[in-house]
Length: 259
Image (tube, rainbow, N blue to C red; front, side):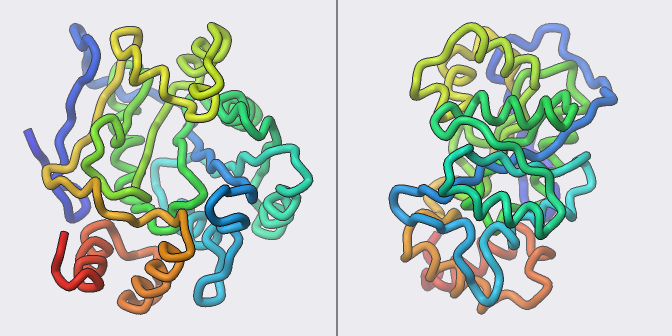
């Protein structure tokens, strides 16, 4: 059944066996872990590029700071010298920063969550400056209220725009998959093994009732950066308060009414 939440309709879909699942408010520490590196192939250094006087990471972390369900925010970058500016950003903004492998992102995120003492992590990409904090809170709430899921996700089936990708991952479930061994691709994409073998875990999918998966709100190219600036021109400050419904409406105005 679809429910309205934060200005949009969404529905919950159980991807794996859910016999015996129940609502069970679980006390646990859940932190957002932001994947952040400067060595983007298509747009190097994009996460710290300035748009209207602020970096993309500034827009993103400002939005996450307004989440009510998070117990913290951690930047997870690599040990490469090229990522020293990410560490400098963390120090300037007072955010904890974990450094790990550049290519083994799964182990890097697991290390960041362990260092924070978290039982679950919210995986967010650093190229998502318009992430909806209300949507993040909703997925975290579903995770807390369900009976120990391995993963709560809104990307199992792409119905939300790119740049609104959120995965709440059990630290123990991720640790098990890391220890069991991952392919290089699975290490890079972190949760790929969860989707490849859904019967091996407990997965809940959050889906938008409108198909918005083709909408580009993440920043991967110079064109995307220009689009972000144009979107901000249509939104008044403070930018963090504009949720998904308002951002989608602004994007459609830019597109001349197209979805």
